[in-house]
Length: 350
Image (cartoon, rainbow, N blue to C red; front, side):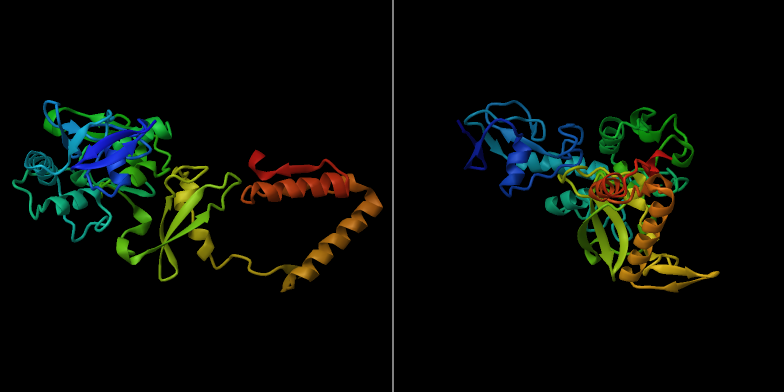
């Protein structure tokens, strides 16, 4: 039996499985948040998503508030707006948030919150001296833009369980650290980029995409990762027919936004001039281009000659890890059922 939640005077049905923030967003009501992400659940750290609830003392964090039947919520009272402005002002003041040159301009949740609240400049400034960390292969860390929301830490520790990131130091010196406070490039980080995808601001950025395109200049193209048979769903961010960056598709099976280092950063091979684009047949010391029909007929005839002379066990096959599972299945059926040998393996075992 559905229950009723009243947000800003309007009634919305709910079943008890979702928070006030989730229900509001599903119904087009904007409540800013920074530490919340659908895959991480309620963290209740940033306090930007606060709302006023009839009968409750103080403001409530909507990302962790599960409604009760008949609950009345206000998302835009003067008290709520004042509290949000204070938090966002503090976050803007305690960092180097220069939107004009930031890679996340146009796709930054802190920028969205400031715009929604009408904050043009932070109310005060705190001097920051943290240096950027560009020691790792694929990720640029900028502590000056970090808002300490904890999303990268939750993703690293709880989602992909690499346990590299954590909060270090105390008070005003608190910051996200790698392992025991060493540069990311010297840490145990495997460069999966989970932290980059979860970061709501520009504190974690893909190095390979630096300066290549503004967020609104790219077109998103959904595809399947070519690296193994899992079938992870990718979004290619494309400008002028060139991939600028790759992200996992949130909410899509099987990966639910997760990617490994190869799926997220290993896309350069598609632009290699050494890629084979047509079959080649050796003639002496050289190769000549051939059609697929000619090449496949040649291979099939060679197989028949070998089987006739030395038997099916004289042939072995190795399936490619980059092929889809169905292709590997068909290859092993070809060798076992058609050729008649169990000499079939997979390159992932090497």
